[in-house]
Length: 497
Image (tube, rainbow, N blue to C red):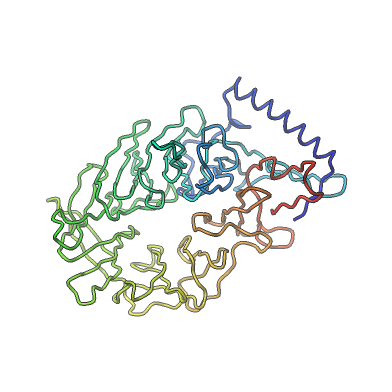
């Protein structure tokens, strides 16, 4: 969309921006406030969408405003200095973003300002949170988030490839607390958070170091479970009203045998309540690689070095604890054939637990839905390369292909993929983490003049634009360089909405 504004309009905007900056600066110093409105979610409001680019509590949607590559962050990532990739919130009405009347200049062109006519948007955390490893969670009265480390090593290099995990009160009344700093490169770190009763658990696999933070109100207790984990479970609970599966009272992880001359791995369980670790399975020549828990099963890749060909199979394992501290296991092989390199499996995902033990996998060309009781998987999709699987729901698989987001009904054979981002906008689709699928809404980034900003598309019934297409809109706050012209600019300022 091309937007042209007169120079006088530009000067007026710049003047207003300077005045607003002075007002905001005064408010910061006099009032200590960060936002435009003081209302907050109710304590008992349900939370939706934990663990992604956005998280909603009650009528408030918390989101990362934009995207920045970790390599571009540097040491500038200081609290209070960040706007574009910081954490904002918007107050919803009937679950929707409220817009003001669109403003036009004297030439009849739409004027794009900092919020693009969205009401009730304010900043919550002025620190980088929109990057390759964005994770927003809300538990109780706290917002938890991930940010690149801005500290330097002994050689003066900024440690932006490592991560920091913070929490801050939703009402912005207290401090910004650092809970954990990773020691490994961010690509070797996984994070999961969920609550059992009144206790919140933060599970971090930091390279081979497995850490559990036990959070009881204001108190945080850190436990290093092991420094030799090869894989670990990372339970996913997006909504605060989701019941916790019994299997997730434990975190499962694998370690090598203490005797390095023995081939194989040991499968262990860490009891979140008692903080005790027990061995589940220990068998020479057998290696376990944990995929994750799902429903009542622990999914693993199991390799038996004692079998000719060293086949690797995907299994769904039910586990129950005996009174003597041992475990009873029952293994169901979802794939009876090998899924090692000879099978050329490029991507696989766990499906909704109501389908029983099952997986989705792709071999680089075709995509299959495979149940444990079926010898052959359903061929869901043909001749469409699945770059990355983004999300799997009860019915749909969302995936990246050809630099865009698609979905298919994975329960039916020979599907035609549906494009999820309308063609008038181009998403930043290089990694799965740049999309957040929350119910009827999909959140993603779009590039403006200089920076990426959050957009969303909704597939809610009856919510369409003037042309009858799914409703797509910018959400957040723009930097001046992305909506204001200067004297050196050309007469046209092109902005993608």
